[in-house]
Structures are given as structure tokens and as C-alpha cells.
Image (tube, rainbow, N blue to C red; front, side):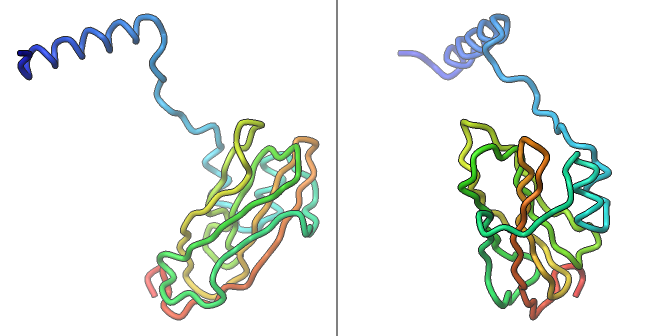
Amino acid sequence: MINRRDMLSRSAAVVAMLGSAGLLPTAAQAAYNAAVFDMKTMAEVVKALGGSAPTESKDVTITGPDIAENGAVVPIGVATTLPGVKRLMVMVEKNPSVLSAIFDVSDAVEPNFATRVKMGQSSNVMAVALMNDGKVLFAQKEVKVTLGGCGG
């Protein structure tokens, strides 16, 4: 019968072996410029990420409540069926930092994400798709907040 101490020592040996072979993941590191999360407008964020002027598109969809009871946890979904999407972003127009979330998309990732954002007041929420060719497409939805999430 194997005891706990033997199991831990064998597990440590397996982890060391996998690590030395390069089969363990390295530490995750953000590939984004932290300054984009401090920008105040969608145009500034898109320009900093290398995109062109944003245009509205029906191929990008955003889902969320018409009225959010609590601005601290507003459920938002963003998706697109377009091929060649590089990034999908969630932006809240009247938040102190317009960019709320950013997702990298590859051929192995379906461009369909759900998250929760914090909203201080009623505002337009935008789903923004940055394409591989630099085009920027977006959809927007107005979300009304009854209880502010940013100290309200």
C-alpha cells in the first residue's frame, strides 16, 4: 500500500521530469500594453492596438441585459462568425477605462466569449472585433444600470 509521503515524492519526480523535458507550461504573461486599459475612448484603444477606424457591423454581436440591477456584475456576451478575427474586446463607453476585456482569437478558438463587467452608470456597451487585416468592426447595446458598480 502506498502512503501519502511516497505518492508526493513520486509526483514531484514526475513533475521534475516533465519540466526538464519542457512539457510543462511556462508562466502566463500578458501580451498587452497596460496603457490600453487606461484609455478613455474606443478610437484611442483601437489606434493603440493597430486597428483602423471602427465601423458598425451586423456580423459582430453583443448580448446583455437591457436593465442591469447591479452594475458591479453585468453579464455581457460577445461573438462573431467572421473568419480572420484577431481579437474580440468589450468596451463600456462611460466607464473611467473604456476597455473592460480583451480576448485573443486564433483558428483554434471560437470567437464567442461571455464575461461580467463593472459599470458605474448606464452606458453603451460595445463588442469590438479587430480583424487580421486591421479592420475594426463593432456592435453596441445600451445597458441601463439601476445600482452603480463603481462606488454607486
